[in-house]
Image 1 (cartoon, rainbow, N blue to C red):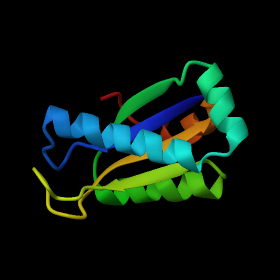
Image 2: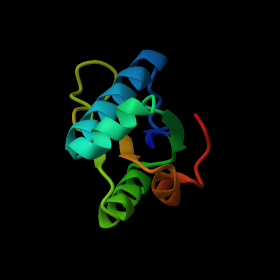
Image 3: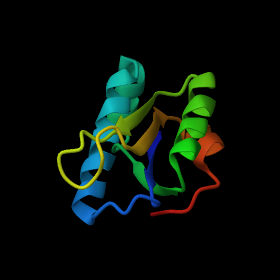
Image 4: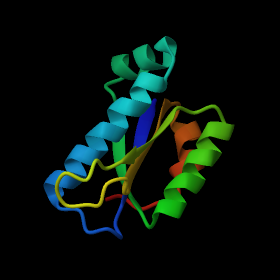
Length: 112
């Protein structure tokens, strides 16, 4: 079991902003998962990987693939209080789900 968080590299987020957006994505997708997935992921150590995303379009395309496969997802939009314009898409979480299911969606992306 794992979760992949895809963070955009094309919008110039600072390190703190990036960390916050990744956390928002992870928690939001976790909350969408059913209790069985949540429990399995928690018992397995809550494995996560953070990957590089190129654009808003890419995040939405990956989200659609995951949703078609029944994998929990969450797209994060920034509130715009600091570095970014309100509504800027910053990150996507895919999972928690079985490693191979998450990899089928995000396996071609590079580690952040």
